Image 1 (cartoon, rainbow, N blue to C red):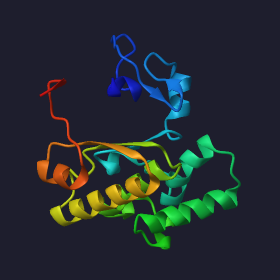
Image 2: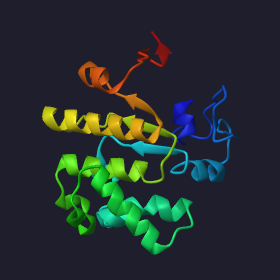
Image 3: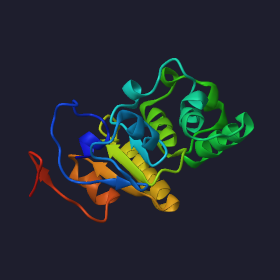
Length: 182
């Protein structure tokens, strides 16, 4: 169902169940409806920020994009929010004008987190957000994510294979094996 919610399943795959997000039924919703929910009610932190960030956009433009798509804000209001979010994720102001290839893996993941959280979504889906990072950076990213999500009063679906990361990131855990809860 989560894959269907995010639009990751082909349209001919049958799903069942019910998911309501922001008062909107997600299962079976149109692409247009789902697009309106992404970014506004959900944020996604991807496993590989190098592949998920747009290489043509500067960091500032990357983080600003969800605000432009989902909210009617002035350029100055968007710029203020981007600067505040860069500070929240621990990136210096000069990163705003850089492109993803100019950043380290941990910095790119922080940009991904900032992009996911900029619209203050109610649900954050974090798909293996620490896989490609060294153990020290993994700890920093998990602590940052948990702190920001808790501070925003949001919920997080944290997908991982690493139980050490899981223990640090969650208060409740569900283990799946081939799609079934075990």
